[in-house]
Amino acid sequence: QVQLVESGGGLVKAGGSLRLSCSASGRTSNSYVMGWFRQAPGKEREFVAGIVWSGGYTYYTNSVKGRFTISRDAAKNTVYLQMNSLKPEDTAVYYCAAGGRLTTSGGEYDYWGQGTQVTVSS
Image 1 (tube, rainbow, N blue to C red):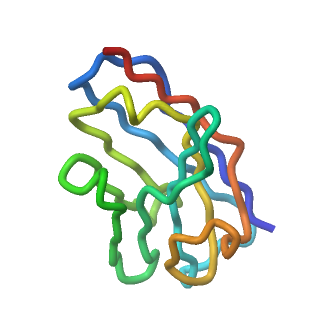
Image 2 (cartoon, rainbow, N blue to C red):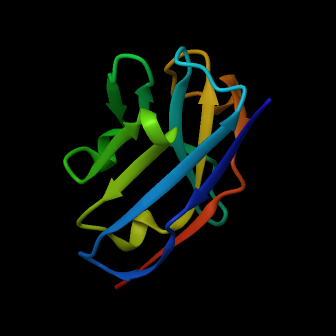
């Protein structure tokens, strides 16, 4: 089992920044892929960004490219999502997930955190 705990959400004005953290514990593995997803009220969950833990390869959904950066700190077993130039449409609950391969499909991730709320005001 792998436990994931997100933190760092909050309320920010449009144009502002937040950094989300996802701390992993339990039976973690360097072969894992870590992903960030989000779900806004009334909308389906969507992929935001992913990182291959071992090699650091990253992938982003188009709407956040150039604004969000995913990274990891192996020593801390933590993945980060730096979010800059935030927009009201970024408002959602953000979830961290761990899986076996880098994919935008949430169904293929095995472990999920509880989520952290990000609210961007206009």
